[in-house]
Each structure stands twice: as C-alpha cells, then as structure tokens.
Image 1 (cartoon, rainbow, N blue to C red):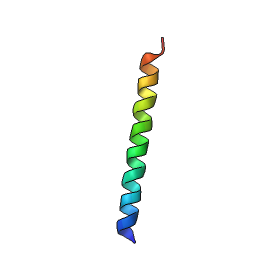
Image 2 (image 1 turned 90 degrees about the vertical axis):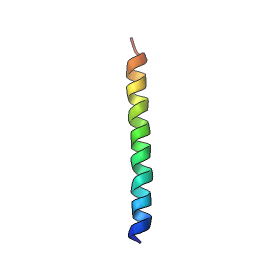
Image 3 (image 1 turned 90 degrees about the horizontal axis):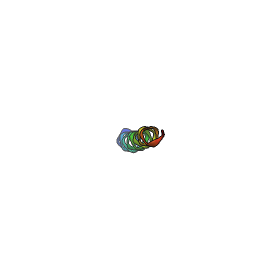
Length: 31
C-alpha cells in the first residue's frame, strides 16, 4: 500500500511543480 502512496505523492509533487512553473511564467509575462 505504501508503494502506491509514494507514486501518488510523486505525481502530486510533479503537478505542484508544474503549477508553480506556470505561476512564475505568468508573473514574468505580466508588465
């Protein structure tokens, strides 16, 4: 069970990182 949780956490971390990059990108493009 813990194995699948690790996979879930990894996927969630990647999603969070992607969102963070998107936020930073949008900030950079704003005047």
